[in-house]
Length: 457
Image (cartoon, rainbow, N blue to C red; front, side, top):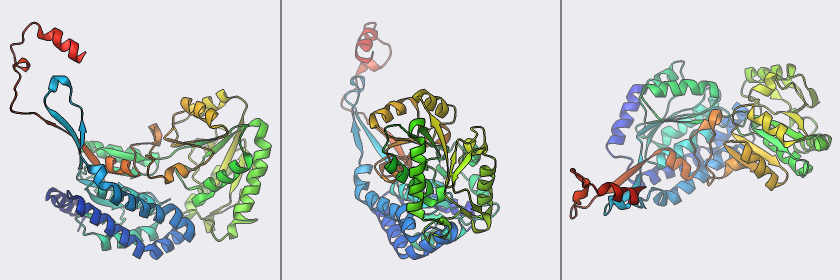
């Protein structure tokens, strides 16, 4: 079945009402849960081949998160989908008003390579829970995982309900030429322009989960040992290829030397003397990505505090800390997406605000230190999400809507937010027939204007 035929088949299935029943949606979610469980070993092996992920990291950051989301969606679906009664204004009395969540139709999910299981299947869970049919396009940069997802989805669902489109040179062009009811894209900002341009042809709404340079501010009052341990974990998770990883540090000058020492200690504690030989240390997806990181380091103009090794043939980038790189360098202008951590210093909070506000709005903002001071800083610095005294963990909660702002994305998902993302929040007003007030009809009496001003103004 080619792409055009696939989309047409899904539209026919959707229009037949095949996904409207909540029982059908729950059954689809349970099928997905069972398929993931039966394919778990294959998925872990694929993630190891594509990104060097350990079994623990694969389950913790990919498979387990999806299974948890499925369980939550099955339990809460009835509550999420329940019609909501809302107030009716006096001038519309005695009508009644409700809001119903209804499926959109046929949706396209375009997934990236860095978390190829999680970022393919979490949107799928939300789309199925909301009652949609789904076309999923995994990234060809993680080919083993894309193949595993194709086998999993083909086993769990008929094509008219959910299907994976395998990569060909023309696959994305063909997909973007179709009319979808929603496009959900996770990936880089540059390609997001193409997604939005294609969606505009059909006036298709989009959700864009992008990235950017998420700052991590370390205040003078921070617990430096804890901060270093958590920052190192978040920065080296998936070899730094996490959209909400701390992209760079802004450290109060009075504690910078102590923090650098703690960062070196945390790196050794977590990854040993030579992370290259650590069994759980991940890799870049290919040689090209490793070479890009080498170029960033070669032109950054800063001092390498530790690490710095890049072995492109092994797709290996060592955990690296760079002190005071040139703020105009590519390292400080591009999203790093690697285990390379630039460290900048500041003295006054105003310096932090000016620097962060000079760039695009980040996907995440982190502050280590007093929560009160962190909240004061966040009031001046917009971002998609915030975490105090931790990194990355805000993404793990299904109760916290996840998404960006400005150049870091638009739209939210996870948990109920996923259900709402893929739903039409449809308004219903029911007017009675037993009463028909004549005042709504022309000709209008002169006194009516004053009365309307009192009840509406």
